[in-house]
Image 1 (tube, rainbow, N blue to C red):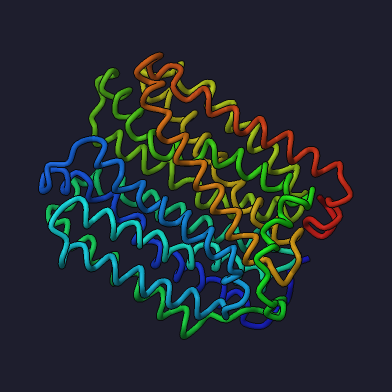
Image 2: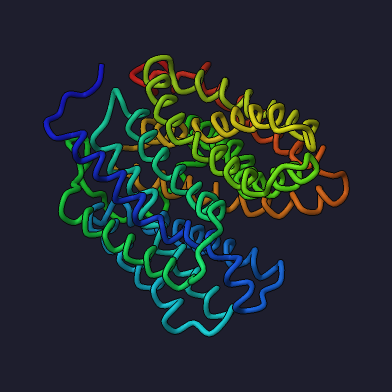
Length: 404
């Protein structure tokens, strides 16, 4: 049964909006890479670093935050709000003072650092408002971010935006608005724990706690696959549609649909996980997404009527389990250190994504698109094993109200 708390869903919906607005500073780079390539004569490696620098900054910021317990020792609303405003500041500096790639990359790195105070902290706030329906609550947050991740592909399908500066101005304004919304309308809920003392050693407890380790291993298996697919599926679709003689515009629209469909799917998966158990739902979703990773390459170059349904199924299953790993660790962790554990989890996950994103191009060059995604199935396989082990352990009693 869902928690009945007055004003709860108003706060949670505003939190989801605030997080989506703040994370626009991350999404904005993908929308303007073509324009920056022309303006600054960027090569392929520099284009990749403009995106990867945000991830590196996020990993560094999240790891430092976890070691210092910032997400638990600082009031969550303040940490979220100030982090969003700082992300807005460094984003607006790119069109104002940046003269080329090096400065832009440094500012993008700082953007990632500050967003480490937004994404996991938002999940921590969500956890303070939810208990029996925590999967749905965090699923709402991840769903909003998924649609935001897809937005640049919709922009590119419409021909892109000629003036890249205005995209970054808009992203900065969006992040600032997200911070203001958090300050004015978002607060921690009734399940918030008292702020703990500083404990740099608590991060090691994640390694010692078997239940947390299994849930995090499931999350890492999921992340092994997710961002490599999100990064390269637009390129795969464009190449496949060209072979099939279909317009590049349709490829961009399909890429948007494949990523965006995971948004509503994350909300549905949250409801199912609250009802049937996090370990069961995540295992089924990972088995399905891993199968799609193995199969999709064999449809390369075929008519979209065959390829697109498999890609959409992959888009549904590859991200809709994400929130349930976060919900699981929030239920397994010491309530005083939920923010620390969530921050550490996302730090490790995004660190792993940088490896798999970089592996796709050399694999594709060696074996072609037909086999390029196949190795991604390794992650879901490991994740399924971890979550089924968690399902058989005593820790399952702490998940989804005892369902597992």
